[in-house]
Image 1 (cartoon, one colour):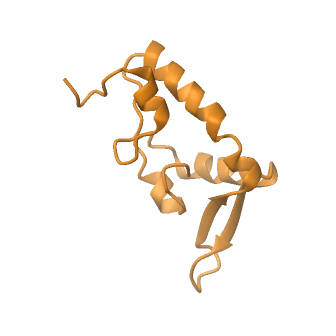
Image 2: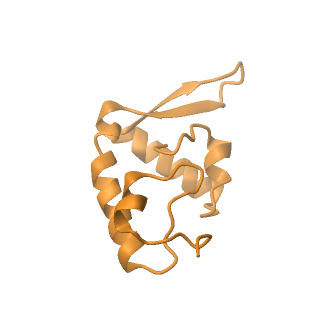
Amino acid sequence: MFFGKQRFEEFLESPEEISTNILANRLKLLEELGLVDKQPYSNHSRRMNYQLTEKGKSLRPVLKVIAAWGLKHIDNTQIPQNNPSDADRSANKPRASEP
């Protein structure tokens, strides 16, 4: 969600290739923990937009530090190229697509 994805289908398109049942369970857990809110985005009652709550947004600095650590210490770790974060730049490690 920090990279702009809001819909179930958008999460499914991620390179992690998470299965639908696992994704549904994780989104439900995030909602139960108060990290995510969901709201319908069409007349179809099962189509939802997921957005971070203030509590969820407060995790951003923590996740940026974890991402920076991963970029530095774990081979092939990448930040999505469509929206690089400060963690990507701070780690000073080129992405796989960079020389």
